[in-house]
Image (tube, rainbow, N blue to C red):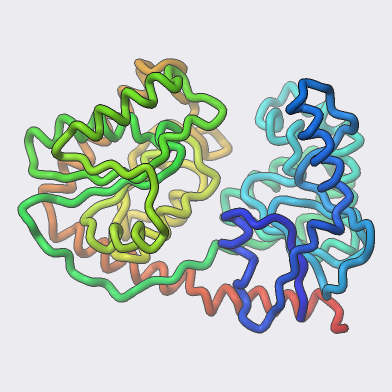
Length: 389
């Protein structure tokens, strides 16, 4: 069987490409007319010209029909007549006008009247769309709330929606060695968005009271910006971490090195402000490293109390923080730092619980994210929904 995909980014590699052993995965990006439109628009934007066409990235329409049984996208919708399915992380269609404003009730009249969103909804409701895989129950609930505003398409789309968490390889639990310090770890490119700043503030106090060593792996990318953080502040923060004997800082490590780090660490962290899923949580758990997280989006699903710790905080009906920092010194930032301190101080007084949750975390990954089970689910959909050729 041949399955077409577009994009070769981390989400595609994590959820689609190569997931099923007996499938040939074919990159069909060269068939996509929107790929060429977006390339032209990008070229124009680099030269300070306005886009020539209105186009969103997450769309597919084939110029020629690729020789595949079906198409499997991440976050994209297709207007072609070949059968297709999509795995998605937040909302569909994942267009800029939708993802930027759908959480604000004041924008719904505009969104419902958008020709591009109407067209995408029609594509998802059509018989060419065979399945829509939400990465989590939270993602599915978000899409269900969005579809309440599109009654003409709602029922036709709802019955195609399924929850399919990402696969994750796990290794049998290995007890941690003890060198006189708790080995802690934080990994995440978007350091500030993922709560790295607040984690450092909390652990700076703890390291004066409890023997700890923290390893940080992060490019410290501020992405589109984070309150109070510019390039000067980023460089200052990197220099400060490099000067601290209780911190080891890496701008990056190969994935195998990161997994080895998880296998040697007692406790991991994702005290995040904004995350659609939390892949690093799966990776830490898969190596027996229990995790301290916040309580947003999918994290209550993948980091239950039986395998880790979650910091309680106010959330909205999208299961996101009600408030994120507006400045570096925001009260909500201080709240998170203090909550991390209290939680971690309690955890480190009970090493037996750390080991128990580490063992349980490995079992959870093997039970709920086993790659073989994930592959079986996908191949069943491929065989049922895509015609044989």
